[in-house]
Length: 355
Image 1 (cartoon, one colour):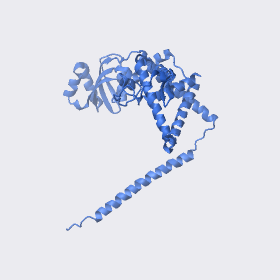
Image 2 (cartoon, helix red, strand yellow):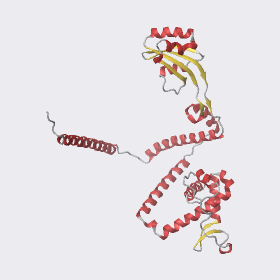
Image 3 (cartoon, helix red, strand yellow):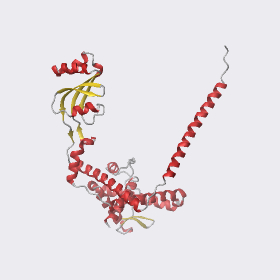
Image 4 (tube, helix red, strand yellow):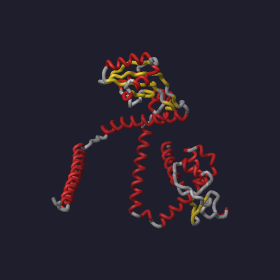
């Protein structure tokens, strides 16, 4: 089945990534290992650390043997290489290096496997515990994978474009230059003072900042730069009044609570965004799929909880929480008592002061 092959491919790729940690240097291998996400240093060893047997001593399909027994075959190497290229087609241009790296990784893995078996390391309690934990983790990962495949979600290309237009302001990586309305403002406690300044500002709008600072309002002057819907430092009442403006420049009076603001909206600058190219489209498509998968998962969990009769023991949870609370209180009380005892001991050990 396709699902089973996909699971096998993912597992094989994961194992190959682990194998790459063992690899020696090979041309652009540093780059190759970074592409696979490994950060181990690459040492400059010889191209192969195993001895090479004469061509006639092994079957043509056997690449590596150990004590006469085949451990790596041409078919194994080709299968692993095909899986890597299916996952990362761009590595095909490095076929020779990739295959050499995979071969060395398979050799070293075979040696490690033999060593572990020969020394019975797999029989230790720690090994068995780790193996069982990893097996259970893999089982759960596969269960989630196949649960998702049983509840597929799709995203149409037109939907991605619509999502981009509607949400590009919410993704910082999509914003090349955030726009907004260039705004300055001065705060006043009295409406009459604000109206007096408003009249002067309208008479000479280009001198707004100069007039504010030269007439005793320097401390209450604000240069908000470019105000937009995501300007947290601007009072919501002021921000909304600014964003409602349609023409510029514009000077007006705005009340925010008990404070009166004279705002000077100088000009508007439009935001600049990354173009809707293939990279952006694919990134947003994956994001939308994850969102929909989460929504479907929540919906299915609600249905399946009823179907499977899932009940939460709230009383036990409350008892656990109360026990934790009491434990923390006790720790704090013990700390306070110990501090008090220490203070008392210190006071008792102080030399008497002579009047």
